Image (cartoon, rainbow, N blue to C red):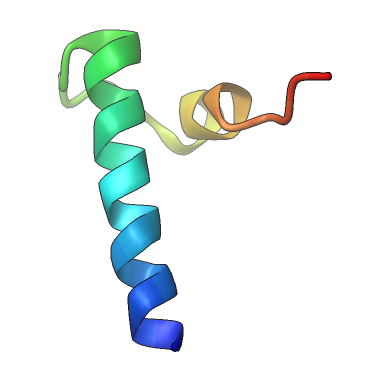
Length: 40
C-alpha cells in the first residue's frame, strides 16, 4: 500500500510541476509546498 502512495505522490508532483513551471528544474520544495496546499 505504501508503494502505491509513493507512486501516486511522484505522479502528482510531476503533474503539478508541469502545470506550475512547465517541468523546469527550478521547481523547489517551497514551490511544491505552495502548489500542494489545500484550497478551501
